[in-house]
Length: 158
Image (cartoon, rainbow, N blue to C red; front, side, top):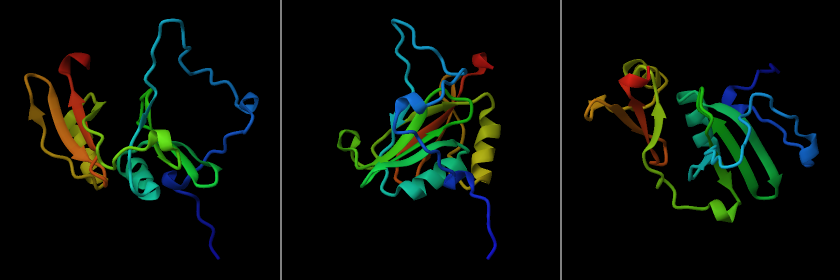
């Protein structure tokens, strides 16, 4: 039997049950008084494994965690390259339930929209053409459940 290395979509991280066992992250942004840091967006999906593969393999998101902290509960967290905000795919957490495929227009800001679009297409993602909407450029796509995403390029930010 041949042993294979797990793909990025299969990688999991164990989270200690005791928060004291979680190592400090020196690269994390400190949360100072008055700050409101958007760091996690729930994405409603039907099949966590299929969605995890889409986000990791087709979009290149990093799989941060894939845990089952209790029977019937699963949490997968993925982060886009270079982003301080992650997404989460969950099951068994009622307060995160929402209709599948209803998340709309999450923006992924890029420095070169044509290059980013071409890379996603090369990885198997169906991305629409680049549109100029008043000097800001967009290209639209959806995940397998119909949640929509937008590549966005603002030339003055590069």
